[in-house]
Figure 1 (cartoon, one colour):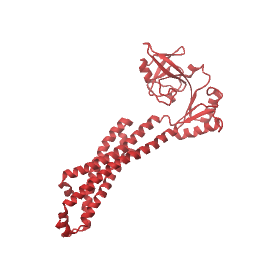
Figure 2 (tube, helix red, strand yellow):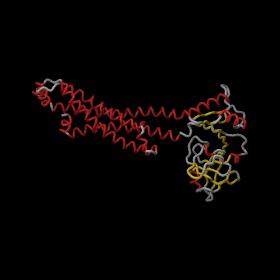
Figure 3 (tube, rainbow, N blue to C red):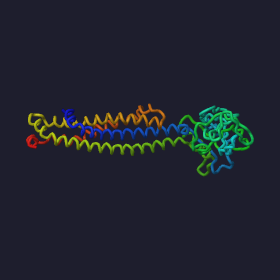
Figure 4 (cartoon, helix red, strand yellow):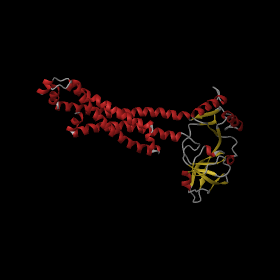
Length: 369
């Protein structure tokens, strides 16, 4: 009977279900969007969260870190990878006359810090150079081409995959050379320690700070990026709550539409309900019939909305996270279930008053009406 009653006015039923569809898509799509953004941020910062950066503090007597301090850092770091760095700036000139201002970083273990899109990033960089993709494109460089620094030529061995604002270049083009190329600089400008994970990086940061610094003096500036991802996670949780609230408003509006549809349906069928009551149909059966109609609207709208949200999620994860199949993971797919459950509950609650009104009306008054 409930299914038949919904089919009596199909256009009104479709419009009511459409409101539910929009509400479910708003909740599920916005929830999955925050998960996709968080995964994108995590993947971009993943290589930084296990790193500890050590540089000269305001109370250090020298212009940089000494070899003795480097040895002490290596001793404290134990099994962690320690990469000392010397930095400078220079201007590169191509054969065509194009120029590019870049930061220069001297390292030995280039593979620990740099990923390349072409060529190689050796773990022992003793000859050759690495340049960022943007610099290579600007100067028209190819693998094997020479670049000049301080009167010496270095062959390009690889192109650095990406640039970030956390490195020595601060987002500029970068030239990576063997540390021996900057031998005229006595001290190290920074040391990067790569721990096993973010927790190990936090612990190591504390150990280094306790060893080199006191409450009154800061010999070394020690910075860990392990808290960055936690801060991003907290921001994403807040953003997620706000977006789900916006989606929830859409579903509440759809619930009001269902309330209106069910109330109008009850008024139109007042005489029919009076006849049912007169021939012995009990109040509870009338109540269940109207509530079942509301539940049908919620289920239909919720299922269609969930399928639409799945399509939106595939696009979001493909664009933001680069992996469309990640939408099937529980972190994102849970919002499809949340949206469906919210739709059914909201629909049933919206149909409760019309159902109660129909079940409790006197059969005589209903027939007279």
